Image 1 (tube, rainbow, N blue to C red):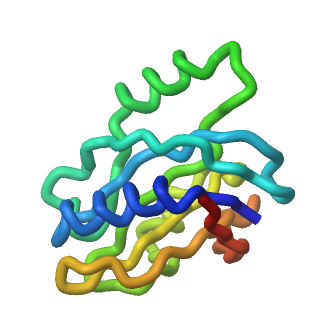
Image 2 (cartoon, rainbow, N blue to C red; image 1 turned 120 degrees about the vertical axis):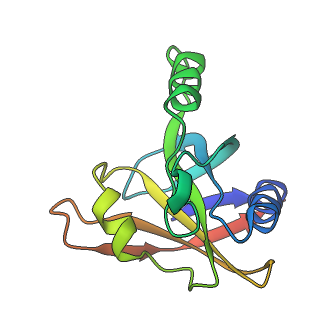
Length: 142
């Protein structure tokens, strides 16, 4: 299960709507154990570095990731996942997502955006063997 404050979900949804028709992306910061309960305490936006393919895939900036890792290196919080949007597609992992799922301990938060309007957000964990994803419970709170 992943717990996401409504204010942070709103930030992710707004990023997806603003990036439409391209995918938005960023990192989820928080604490907890993968496979147990995870709590998101912050989101870090990233430019989508996928270039001409930004409408169907995402790539978090290496600089953004490095900066976040440095900021968190001696504290209890860590990168627990990333988020991105699916323009005019379901909030389910795509074949492109599966190709990029090389960190099985990171949550994939996906927001479906249709005609510039966010519709649905889901959370997933990649299978360690790379065969797919399992949807996990996403809960919001104040």
